[in-house]
Image 1: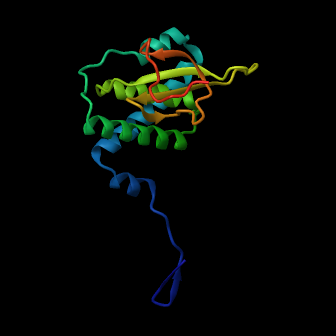
Image 2 (image 1 turned 90 degrees about the horizontal axis):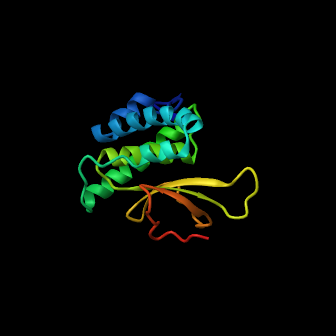
Length: 167
């Protein structure tokens, strides 16, 4: 409550469109793209086989983006957009949906990131599986803090997680 001229006025939070208007155009576009891709990724992950999802996550780069501050800025914007869209999504937006969305968005922009799919050794059914995306050691989305996952697959194939401590 705010006291304005002796009158108690209830404090109102800024609405969605007010907050949305504060973002840059690049952030707005990334947030809209993340929302759409998260919506598409949930049924795709549920019904497509892992090799098909791997082909989607390994799309060729339109033009490789060299290392540097612009690349890191893009990775941070996409990490923010995917996290924000996933938190507000009414659909299931777990690690696989977030990872696939971030990977597609990064590769579309020329960022040669890697999507990792791993399981925790010793887990029984259902398996304790996890998906995360790294770009040159930067945690774009979902990197497990303890590193207790064995990497089963990486997309594009054959990549290793630099700075990641596997179990």
